[in-house]
Length: 366
Image 1 (cartoon, helix red, strand yellow):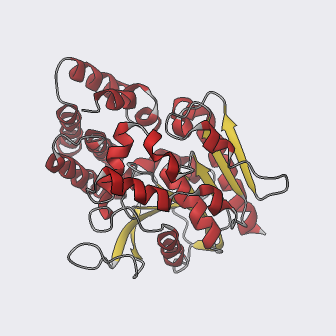
Image 2: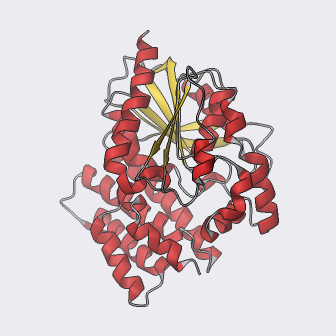
C-alpha cells in the first residue's frame, strides 16, 4: 500500500532537503527493497540515533541535540503514508514530538518552547477543549536586548514543526527569528483538532503570542507556509493585518482538484480530517482550499513559488494565481521544480529565505 509514493520520498528530494542524511535514505531504500517494512527500517534508524545521544559519553550537547533531532526525523519519516497500522503511525508521531522536545534546548540556536492560546471557537474537538498549543521560538543569536523580526513557519498536510529546522536556519542566519507550531490536522494538534478549521485564526493566535515577547519586533512579523501550509499562509495574510509579508511555497490552489491528487495524499487528507471517508475529505478540501479567493484580500507583500513539474498542484492551478501588474502578490514558477521544488532545494530555498527575511527586516527597520 502506497509503496511507490513512499519510494518517492527517498529519491524525490523532500527528506534530503529537510536534513535526512543521504546514507539514511540509502539504508532505508536497500532495506525496503530487501523486504523490510518501511516503518521498521525508519524506526530502527530512530532508535540508533537516540542510543548515540544517550550512550556516547564524550558527546557534546550539540551532538546530543543533532542526534535526537535526526531520531525525531527518522520517526517522522516512518509514519509518512504508513496506514497499514495506525497504532504504529500514532506511536511514531508521538515519538517525533517527544524526541524534538528533548533535542530543542541543544539545537544551535536553541528552540525555546512557548505556548499559544488556541482559538476558542475552534478548539472543541476531542473530550476536552484544547486551550494551549506548543510552539518553538528560535532567535538568530542569544541577544535578548534587541527586537528581532520573526517569521511564523507553517507545515503542510503531512509536514510538521519538527521538519522545518533547515529552513528555519536559513532565516536565522539572515537575522530573522522563527516560530513553528502545529495547527488543525497537523502533528501533535491533529488528534485534538482535525483538519477542516480555517487556519488564519491560529496564525492570529501565534501573532498575539509573539507580541507579548519583548525581544520580537511587532512591526516585523511574517508568515511562510509550504504546500497546504502555503494555502494557510495566503489565508492568514488576507485576514491578519499584523502580518507584514507572506511567502507561500507551492500552495494548494483549489480543493476542486482533490480527485487529481496522488492516492497517498488523498488518504492523508482523510487521516488528517479525523479518519473520515474519502467523500467527506473531498468536501473538506473543497470548502477549505481556494487560494485564488484568498489572495484578493492580501495587502502585504506576498511571494508565491511553484514548480512547473509539481505532481500535486496542477500547472493550470498554479497559473491561476498570476496577478495583474502592480499587485502586492508575485507568483514565480520554477520550470524544473517539483512539488515545493524539493528536487532543486539548494537553488530555490535560499532565494525564498532571502525574499522573506529582506521583506521583514526592511519593514522592521522602517
